[in-house]
Image 1 (cartoon, rainbow, N blue to C red):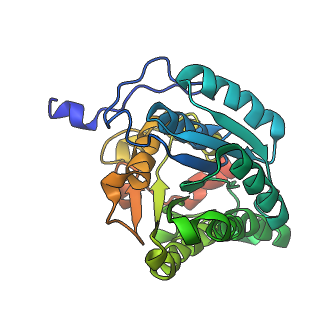
Image 2 (spheres, one colour):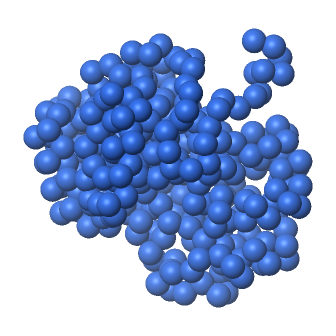
Length: 297
């Protein structure tokens, strides 16, 4: 591989469809025999994580509030990879729905080895304009939802059999990103939770890590959080690697954290952002222009 190739992104597609071509950089059977539950697995980063896991021998359960979304996604994933994929509806804010989904998954697969907490909600909004309910909703989905799902998996599977948890977080809190107090607070809490659970659950042969993506093309976050605006304004030129990332790059990093390659890695956060948080402008006035068209709860 050339030195330039070391920073080149792998192929990807912007839509929630499987890759038209895929080259294995890891052993194709690195997750053979494993079963993974991926919340938020019906679209965006979660969908691509499911696909890459399945291309490496893993069977998956993809879960979302929308049964239709995960049903359609599972058909695409099975057709592209030949692996089994169970689509389930759950709300990470409601533990009883998680318990029901995990029970159904265990009837189907008899085991779950990996949990990827990818369910999330976000939008751009100044703290002064953020409703009490909007802040609480993001905390409930991201932080409380991550705890709920992790605790159910611990009780149902991981306490006795071990396992791996990967929490999808963000770099927003590292420098107080403008218009993101809700999501930054939620993700920072998950990073803290990652460390606490890694310490408490390590003796049960459970590894817990976070992964913090940067701006990733082809995701709802990219569309809602001003990705197209950033492209037009050449904001990505400020990122050390001079580009946004793609979903396959995130999936490969999650694959590393979920696989035996990271067998001695726990309680840490892997930042996968091309160096973005180090150099990108935290421009409050410019971001306010994007926020006017951003979704609010």
